[in-house]
Each structure stands twice: as structure tokens, then as C-alpha cells.
Image (tube, rainbow, N blue to C red):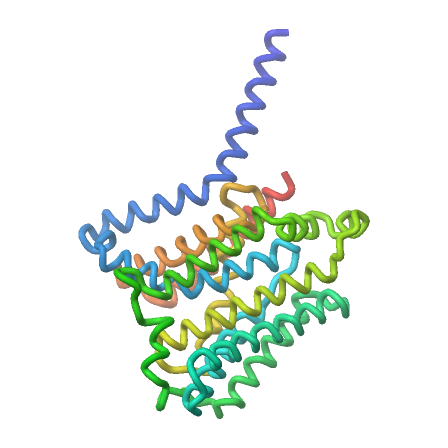
Length: 325
């Protein structure tokens, strides 16, 4: 009897330790990465200037990844966000160059993102295409449209100085891009965690059939998620264009891979196998810290790409294991 109880206790402790490692292992790895970079480059990595650089570098990615989280909450994903960020960036730059006012230009660019997200959502939720096929197709279309719109060239001449408000200006000591990031994080977290809409989105992602039988409009909820993702991609494109003070038709494309990586990394933290805003943000920070630290150590950029791929693979594997358990 005692032996059985001892074995049962050992098994429970082992299972508890496994759950704890799955929930916090990636976060521990993130902290360990900070410690390693701090020890290798003392006085540089944790300097106030470098920490500010990191926050500015991750701000735009965090905007894309946070709204991508909403799409992944309902069980889909959006491959078009990078191309859409580029397209929205060239639209806002072109309108500004043509003399359209600052805020009308920004609103039009955001509408481009909303319409693009609506189109993606219709293809997936109402026409029954897989998210992979639909958004892969629209990614290619948005990229082609941005290249056609600009003739493949970079737009920069004639952009008014007022446009620096979003990507280069500060409010006190804080970059405006970081404030925009924080606002997106806060609003998205509130919607997903504190509202009926958020609970419904999670219900669709948990079991779409059960959500439908419970009376939820699954199609409309999936459509809403894609619209949110489109607006987030457009906002990121605006901030990126403001920061660079120029618009290139492919400037936003790296955001697609990195935003998906950040969400998958977040799914391995705190909540096992479930997309959530806090985890996504830590995932973004992990990618940003890794890139910054490797740059400081002068690691070859090709090796950095390889490491990013390995991290994505591990994140997918870990999130899959967490879901099965």
C-alpha cells in the first residue's frame, strides 16, 4: 500500500515538473539568454541606450504579432501580414507625397489593411479555403500590387516631416512607436481576456463545431479575427514607413515569419499550447533580444537566420506537445 502511494506520488511530481517546464521552460531560456549576453558584453548589452534600441526594434514586430495572435486564437493564421504591411506603407507614403493630409493618409492606409483582412476572412470563413492557401495567395497578390504601385522603387522624396510622428518622434523619453505598441498590446489583451468577444474567439479556436452548436456565429468570428490582423499589419506598415522615412514595396515581408514565430513561442509559455498576448509579447522580446545580442557579438547574419528557424521549429514542437498533453 505504501509502495503504491509512493509510486503515485512520484508520478504526480514528475507530471507536475513536466507541466511546469512546458509552461515556463521557454521563459527560463529567455532569461538565460539575457544573462549570457550580459556576461559576454558587460556594459553594452544592458546599457540604457541598447535597451531602448531593443524596445524600438521590437515595437513594429510586436504590433503585427499581437494582432496575428487573434487569428491564431481562432485556429487560423495569416501569411499575408508582411506583404500587407509593405502595401499599406507604400500607400500612405504615396498619398503623403501627393499632398494628402497626414491623418487622411493614415486612415486610408488602415482601411487598406481592414479591406485586405476582410477579403482574407471571406476566403477562409465563407468560401471554405484553408488559411494557408488563401493567405499564401493574397500574400503574393499584395506583394505584386505593392511592386506595381511603386514600379518596384522606393518612395521617399516629398514625404512631409510631420509623418515622423509615428516612427521617429518621442513623447517625453518614450518613442512613439513603443507607445503605439503598448496601446495595441493593451487593447488586444483586454479584448481577448476581458470581453465576451474574446471568450467567443477562444471558443472557436478550442472547438469550432462545439462553438457552432452553442449558437456562436463561427464564420463571423473568424472573419473578425482576419480584419483585426489586417488592421494590425497596416498599422505596422505605417510605423515602419515613418521610422524609415521611406517606403519600399517589400520592406515589411520579414514580419510574416517572425510574427508567426513569436506567437508559437508564446504558446509554449505560461499557458500550454494556447495563443495569448502576454506569451506573444515575450516571444517578440525573445526574438528581439536574440537578434540584438547576436549583432553585438557580430555573429554572421546567415547564422542568425538559421537560429531563428531552429527556434521556430522548437516552438512548434513544444506547442504541439503541450496540446497533446
